[in-house]
Image (cartoon, rainbow, N blue to C red; front, top):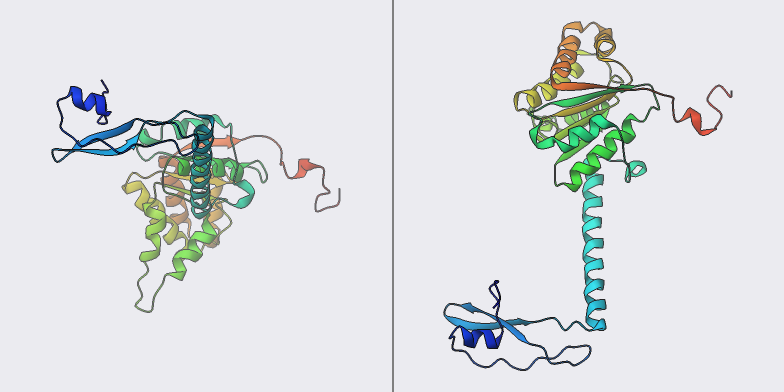
Length: 267
């Protein structure tokens, strides 16, 4: 007898259930009679489906439907990957960086710890974090991948006439993972650094991880951010990132220069 909730007419009789005989049903493709399957609802037997036929035509139809469902799922995930901020160029990105693999595998146990990934221009930082974002979106996580300039523009765009300057921070402070790509390109004025620290510190206090990429090491980033005189805020940002993130240094060449194209100098 079946272990699930559905049963055939013969199994219903063996259970001592009273029921009206189900109407005959046949395979829509080959015409073979099919065995009805029912279940007990509110004390009555309801015939809801039938056992599969198993003919070639039915198998082909089932496979077609499954392909359509998988394609729809892929489209939905692809839309979410784009919405997370992964550029079309990196939509199929993969990475073999061990630290990123470890971070992904232990995401549920991170306790708010993230990564600070530094490397020269063209070393593959954006490609690597795009792969990370893509993998987490496939797991159903909320991810925002952006650069600091775009984040600041987005926050500033939410400023209303009432002077509310907090609403735009929520998207970046509340997602499961925030990835800030290419930090160090922004200006170092007071508002920029205060807003950056607000986002980073809010994630720190709520134990939400952050992944940052930069062409600068953390000490060099602190100097870079403090170049306009806001050294205290710059050092606070670098210190918080140092506390929150494992350090990953990408070694190697600039992949953009290694593609065989003439560089800017014409060399």
